[in-house]
Amino acid sequence: MTLLVPSAARPELRLEAALWRAVSLFRLTSLLYAVVVVLASYRNYADRRAAAVVLAVMAVWTVVTVIRVPPALWLLVVDLAVTLACQQSSLLILTQQQIEAGRPTITVCWAAAPVAAWAVLRGWVAGATAGLVVAVGAVVERSGASQATVNSCVLLVLLGSVVGYLVQLARRAEASAAEAVRLRAETAERERLARSVHDGVLQALALVARRSSDPVLVELATGQEQALRQLVAKPGDVATGKSDLRLLLPARPGVEVAAPATAVSLPAQVAVELAAAVGAAVDNALQHGGSTAWILLEDVDGSVVVSVRDDGPGIPAGRLAEAAMVGRLGVASSIRGRVQDLGGTVTWGSTPGQGTEVQIVVPR
Amino acid sequence: MSPAEPLRLVVADDHPIWRDAVERDLVAAGLTVVGTAGDGEKAVRVCLAVKPDVLICDLQMPGLSGVEVTARVVPLGVRVLVLSASGEQQDVLEAVKAGATGYLLKSAEAGQLVDAVRRTAGGEAVFTAGLAGLLLGEYRRTAAEAGAPQLTARETEVLRLVAKGLTAKQVAERLTLSHRTVENHVQNTLTKLQLHNRSQLVRYALEQGLD
Image 1: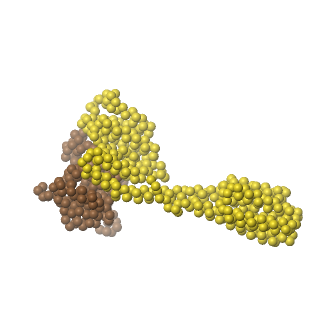
Image 2: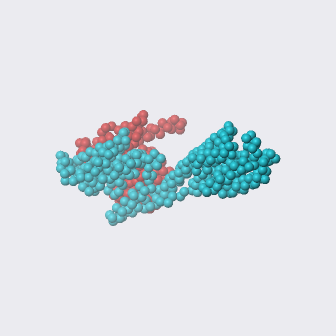
Image 3: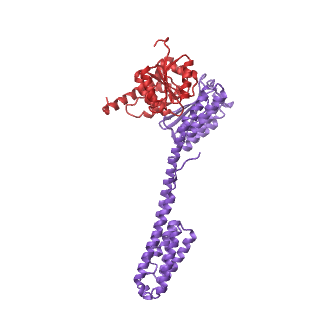
């Protein structure tokens, strides 16, 4: 069945775009800040020309990384290398006094951009690792860990982990929202199909079954009507993992089902097993019993009771054991096995002239 | 109604092919169809105008649903036989609570339909195994509610046998009761539910100040 999914059901693309826009904004703003810091200290630098060149490299690289989003993995590796190189170039540009006095490096907080980028691309572990790499670079550049450097290092690692963690959270939320949208669309589509099938094909099939005098045609139409009806019925609640037993019972010509008007919800696995046991009992009834099998489904507090009766001659009292010997109840063991696995019980009974009856009781 | 008088019937179904098919079957059996309707509102208008013995009513119709139509025509003294596709159990139950006395699957044969119409006209409940299953389920669902009608042990026993496809005669044999007693039990289970439904509607109306 092809299901229509509205185009709005791909919000993950919008989330990705928003995340990379935020990273780009960080790159541009931190570049601007670096320019201001460099201009302020420009006159005191040891190598002013190198400062200008490094600033130009930073600007070009910022443009490259802003254009190429979402970035490939190799681009982020190069990003980290470029950033480290720019960061270490401070050793040439700043005077020894400036470095020891803790003046800002030439990259300032621009060096944190790849940390955010790694966190967005690969999650919190990658973010924290990238933060650690840039932090080690900062320590090397300062030739030691002053209080201020340690603070920056911790901030870099924290930035990587926190951004990465939040991004993972957002992606998960986005995925479950998309799943909810998909399920809603699927349900709506199923309901639309069910309405259309109900108003058209099902009516026609029922009419064919009713007006035809050809028994083969009647059986075919009835069988198809019931199969189609089950197909378009809601099979169960995906969210709770429960199935409505009523929709799993064998519905076909020669089988009459009596059930409550409301759903008989059971864990999906239990419902399937129980329906299989009922199916076996119905097959058995139609093979050895008579022309019709009746299924009564009851939801009695604490347990589900399913009775299957046929309109055959029945088994005279005291002869159930004998019947078991000759195979009439051969299927019984398989039914009993399935039901016992569910913690339930099976009882057999027969009233002469009123067919044979199987009662299956399964606790909830 | 004297037996000589032919039954006067109205058929309501929004599918023309179905409406015609049901009408043909009824006419072929010598019954008189005095009106047809393709939607719920028209069904009510026709019933008001011609006062039929029985309305044979589809459940899913545009405008007023079969349940609403039933609730409006039963007070006029019209008996309602619901004709439903399978898989509409909730609606069937609501229609029965609203006063419909019979329910037949659309796949039933013409002979069954005619028989059901005759029995409905005679005031007898047309009790299929499916309907018995619905009633059992409904009594069990509301069992814990204060003021909800309860089944006696005997009524439960009878309903369960009917739901397993036994005829009234077979039920009588098995429980060593008279045929008449079995039919009374069955009728009672239906009447109790309808009375409760009506009293609930009245209480609701009084609470809302709509008396």
